[in-house]
Image (cartoon, rainbow, N blue to C red):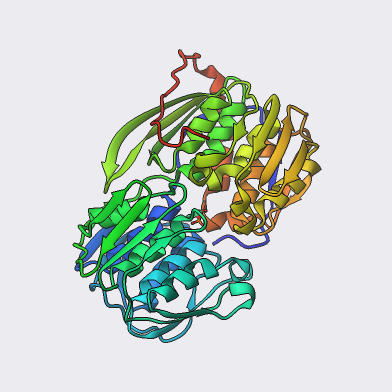
Length: 460
Ligand code: S3P
C-alpha cells in the first residue's frame, strides 16, 4: 500500500509511448464483488482491481459474512478472487462498515443493505464524509427503508434499518450511476417492480452484470426496471482494464508529437468510452479494436498517434460518460491550441475533491490561462506550461492528471500527497516510468485510422 505522503516528481518527457495494460476497471470490480457475493454459489473473478477503493468493497462484503478467497495477488493486493455467494441474505456485521474513500462502496452497499433485515452503519474517510448521501437516502426511504444520514448536510455516517421494501418508480434528479445502481440492488429485495428513470444515460455496468447473473433488468429508453425475487446465478467473471485509468496515457500520447501508444485489454463499454470520442474531436488519431466480451462488457485495444490537439466545446449528454476523465481532459485542453469550454459538469464539485476548483488552481499554478465557471471551465490552451509544486488534494485523479501535465511542462513538477493514486491505480508510477522510457518515435507513422463511435451521446 502506498503511503499517503508519497510525492511524484515529473520532468518534461523526451519520449512517450509503447504498450500498456491498465489494471482492472474500478466500477466493474466493485460490482463484481457485490453481485458475486449475493449470487447462489462460487464465482471466480479475474482481473479484480487491487486498489484501496475496491478493497473497501471486498472487506465490506467479508464483514457481511461472505467468504472471499484470494486466488492470485501481486505486490499491490489480490487480483484473482473466489467469492462464495450465499444468496441474497447477508449476515449482520459486528461493527461499522468502513467504506474508506469510496463513494461507490457507500452508495451501492446502501442499496444492498436496504434489503437486509438488520441494522448497519456505514462510515467513510474525511472526503467521503463530506459527499452528498441524501441522493440515496431519500429514494431508499421512499421504498420503505429505515435509513438516515447522521452527518451534517445529509452526509455519512449512514444508518440503515433494512427490510420491508416496496418497489417504486424514481426519477433521478441528477445523473448518477451510483444512485441508479443502489436502487436497482434494493429492487432485488423490494415487493413488485422498481424503476429508475435517469435524466442522462450513465454507465450501465450494474444492469449488464445483473443480466449476466441472470437477474434480468428491463431497459426502455431512460427507464431501467428490475423485478424482485430473482436469483443471481453464480458465474465467473473477467474484469476489463479501466478506461478511466487508460485516459491518462491516452491524453499524454495524443498531445505528444509523433508518439505511438497501445493500451491493451481495456473496457470499451459505450457508456464509458466518451474519452475516445473527445480525443478524436480534439484532433487525435485514435483507433479502437474490440476483441472480446466479458459478461456483456466489450474489451479491446486502443491505439493513439500523437500530434497537436485543438480546443473543443464539451457539455450535455456526454458529460456522465466522461465525468471521471474531465480532470485529464482539462490538462489536454491546456495543451491544445485554442479555446475549450467544459460545461454541464457541476457534479465535479462533489467528487473526491471539488474537481473544478482544484483543477483550475493547479493549471493556473502551471501558467495555464483559464476561467472557472459554476459548472465547468473555459481554458485558453496552448500556453507553455511551467513545472510547479502542486497538491493532489487527496484526490487520486488530480494526482495522476497533474503528473501527466508535468510531462509537458518546463522544469520539474512535484505532486505532493500523491499516495492517493492507490485509490484507483496502484501501479501508476511504474507505468509512468515505463511509458516515458520508450523511444516511441522509432515506429513508422502509420495511416491514421479514425474510429467511428456509436451515435449514443452525439448531441453534446
Ligand atoms: C461510478 C459512478 C460515477 C463516477 C464514479 C464511479 C460508479 O459517480 O464518478 O467514479 O461506479 O457507478 P456518480 O454516480 O456519482 O456520477
